[in-house]
Image (cartoon, rainbow, N blue to C red; front, top):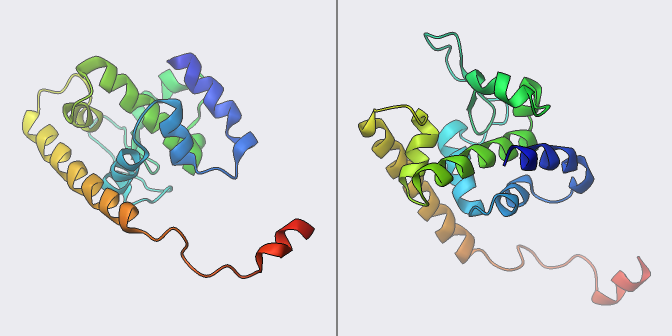
Length: 165
């Protein structure tokens, strides 16, 4: 899976027009709405988010709030702190970690709790609160996206115009 992260980060610039969340979700076989719910829960969708400085000197950064404790591991794959402060870098690394935790504990809501607290945490109460919060966001996002119109506004040009472009 680490090799996949490297390949994905190299491909970021090649498909800049595609949505980073959708591409990260597809690459790691995750539901894109679940990734959106995690980003909303973690940072209110702020790619420049900085969490508080923790007692160990680390902090969570970026839209998916990747803890800086992971920087040495990520550096082995060419991922930098500044990559985590970008939309695509944070999305791919967040998806990569979530996929790792799903592989570790199974495709359950508990994988989200582990994403939040880390795999070594015994704080089950914090995990359950996080799982519930992300699940609520996920369900709301799914409802909103399923009720969205196929076309947000009337097309600005007649259909015959596209042939000339």
